[in-house]
Length: 346
Image (tube, rainbow, N blue to C red; front, top):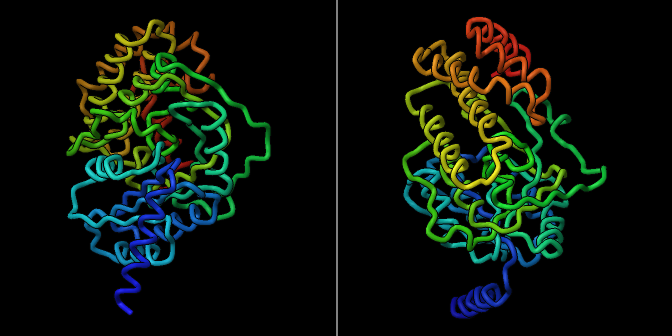
């Protein structure tokens, strides 16, 4: 009986290898037993023919690893790897290394995907012959109810095509591109000689501009498929520590590269300023301030006042916020704390 099962498993494995994989859906897993089933089920329930689901358990100490193995037993499309804890960047590098798909789609294990996503992704990839497909996120916060999480794509699909230069110019500020990894389907070959930096926070920011620079065609859709479940550890809710300055360093790296890579600078400076202020916001939440940093960002904002006023990528409210930041940090701080109180209850 044991030998028969062994032969059957070998047959399944060889059959899986013979089927050309279009997309590898890569899910880094670490101590997420509360959310993991929701994430995997949201994918399993879709049309994922010619796709594989790659679960890499990064040394979980809860039941996450057992849940991965449970799904492995049930579904042929799932591949599970267990490793010692090495951190998210290391796991993502392993995902790229192990992925059999032509494209790779990273999903955080505490988030999930709305119905119809992968059938849609495969259609756009086939018709557009793109290197990267980006799509929208539904943002959900810890205190929101389940009823507010679901958003259906019952409106006209709008696709926008970007060159690598256009995408990098706008990636720090345009929501159609964004800096995160998990709202993108990326041709795996673009990662050649590119690794997520192990030991740094904000590994997406340090890496994605390099991947985008290797692309020829980037397509963005206005459809929203990714449900981004914000918790206190997300960028928007993180308290300031010295490691938060990794974000400022990553943003400067993107900014400096973009200035040399892009023939036109429409959004780079505004996007750079936006993220520098994000770092300052984390200081406000922590009541811990690096005054030299604040003064430098204020000076930079004043130097770019004309761009703040004239840019088409910011609404009136955002422009006013940046101008207030530039000239009165105490006043900006008061307004930001009111915003936190009203909208960010975590």
